[in-house]
Length: 143
Image 1 (cartoon, helix red, strand yellow):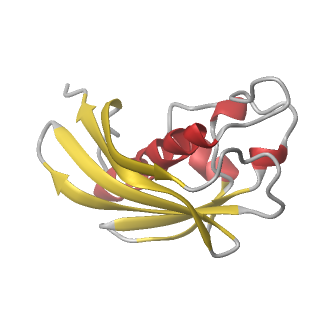
Image 2 (cartoon, helix red, strand yellow):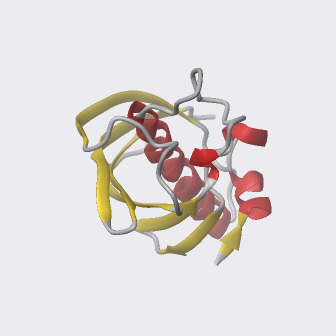
């Protein structure tokens, strides 16, 4: 299991914008992460007194970034930064997150990858209940 300090070394998202607290498990094809910051009144994506479910897409995209960072570190090469270019088939099962007690848990897995792009699927749960699922495509910034 990896903690937040190690995650911060793997992704460009820093401070409160790094949404994941721990990596529960990972392999070359998938990752499982956990976070409890969705109830934080100072959450950077919060608007007014709520954190909308649409922000689960950012949690999904950051799960991909953490996975990419871990894979890059394992290969001993530089981590290739990416730009989120598409979300597909996103389904949200709740309207907001800030009223959910307990941790969020995400699973993301590689669907397709090439030299300059990747596509992942993600699912985010809370206490066994599916909150969101979808696919995301990233264009990698090649050297």
